[in-house]
Image (tube, rainbow, N blue to C red; front, side, top):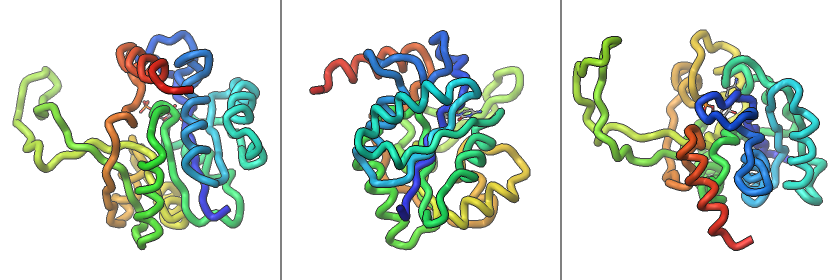
Length: 228
Ligand code: C5P
């Protein structure tokens, strides 16, 4: 395929306190990873590279095969790294030769609707080298110092919250991560610091990242309301 989706699922999930690496915590009888992969397969026909913590490769393969159905041969499982960026690099190393467009998606954004994937791929097809889904920031944001004192207000109209899947031309992402000196919390930051413009498409509130226990409750409630 021309398209690959790297699903990063190698985080420890310490903020979630779910007792397992985050991607393997259940939303119903199925894991966060399973739901994330169901979304990926519903959205795209792509090589799907799943990046997981060491020791969880077998469990991930079971989840992935189950989510992929007859497209199980499109799945590659790789072992992640210490940081998200290292995990993305491990995923890139497993891409097939014919892949030209890479989406990087957080497994923790397990309920991301297919329309978000479509908008991201559409922007790349329209000529962008890098694209992120973004949503407006609803909170009032302050810049603070190390003691927690407010230094400045930040104009909310200039802010957007970045989601995933983030889409890239493969050559652009590979070069940016290869040259990255800092550790970036998302891939668009590495690509932007390599000098490429990054465009945005509309994200979706449902693409929130399951991070805290209350996010997990919200995700479980959404899943239980879904028609199966
Ligand atoms: O830690 P954070 O919530 O920002 O992680 C975002 C995504 O990156 C998660 O899906 C997590 O599994 C993944 N990740 C990873 N490897 C790491 C750290 C995070 O794949 N070392």
